[in-house]
Image 1 (cartoon, helix red, strand yellow):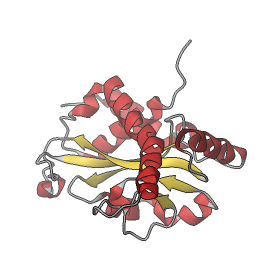
Image 2: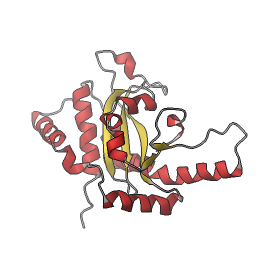
Image 3: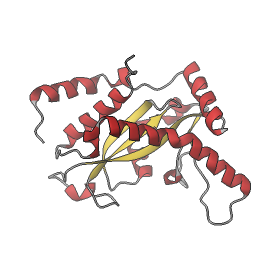
Length: 207
């Protein structure tokens, strides 16, 4: 897919305005988000839900095999953290699709600053983050057949809370259908398109 110079310029401008669209909560915003997640899941202290999402692309000309994911198509990963309303509060993308979500997190700028950004709060995550050194993520317990009723209920609570991030990815892909299959081989352009979609996802709905 050939993108016009005008669109590329627009994408470049949007990429420099990311903080205006996606921003980390502070002070009372964290408390409001924690209250919302507690209402939904019953879990205390969670201000967001984290997950990774594959964005299908064409095979890049350089190290193309790195982008083949476990589902046998080429993709880049998008890591999203959303608040209780399903708005992105942190995004990171461009990592090859074959990379595990835990490694994706470790590669992100967020991971380098998580202590300062999270403070006393935590995120809700799925089984991809189990057994990793992520003390700021609440994860379900792996079901090896020996879980107690309390463990199962807690897993259900986490699942209810983190559904917001999956729904956010789904809504974004429905609204910006090009994200279902980006016919691009330039990763720099792919990253700009994905980030632009995340930013536009956060814009308030018009009345």
